[in-house]
Image (cartoon, rainbow, N blue to C red; front, side, top):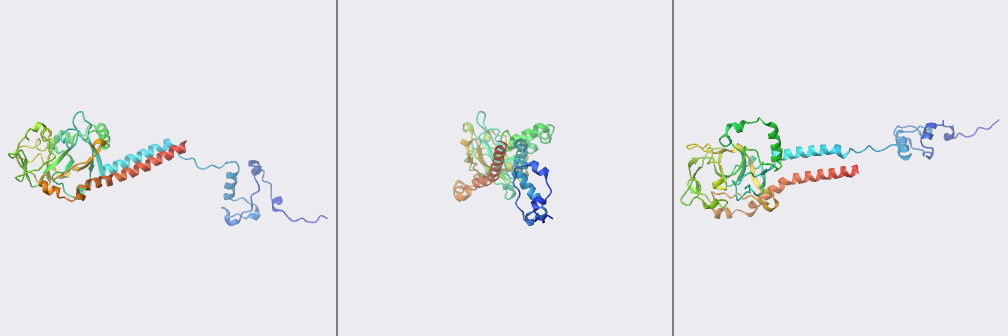
Length: 335
């Protein structure tokens, strides 16, 4: 009679030919505490848990692989889409870059034939919290008296309008024909006329102090009769006074049809951002104040436009860095 031999779990356990064929050189797995097993199986019954299978697969020739990263070319359209959406939102609600299409604002803004047009950063938030003031350079949508009823209502070429809008949004194309850039000379309730004996524009009978004024060949300004600006409107004039089709040119005698509704103002021109040689803050002295009063303004107010421009540019810079980092990471993964 043969004496019973103490049972050995590893010997008594049924053979597992399938697992042995997968990797015959694997060492027997160490006993695993049931609490550490993914499926709660008991070690003494010899069952293999989900966590042990994953471990065996990882150490047994690399059969289990990490999920493959998405291709750079699949991520690129997503990144471009995100960038376009962010650019649209920023330029719709915060700030936008405009290209100066003509020389009507010389010498303040370049747009003359043969020169590189200035690109300006326009603050679109400022007039949500304040009123337009004399001396400020603004971009605005021309009323019917400026553009004509046909142009104001012309939406026939939607495709051309779309590409023009995209180009102008990034400062690569001139603004819409209905958009203008001029300087505010007078506001609602004020009277404006030209000129006194010293060739100065008068507002409420007082001559303006206009250091930005540009008169080609020192020609006198073209006179126009007194106009009372309606409430809620502003009177616009170009710095290149004799080469600017502004409120004077669109005004019918005896009316104020050349005045622009405040609601048509898109934003205040803050900075010249391109070309680099022209980078500067756009001056906005109030021509209705004397030079002495203007010079007494605190220094922090003079630097305020620059600070606003930096703050407005920060989100764009931050988003650009994140997109650049994401693209770089995708390229490295692709390699």
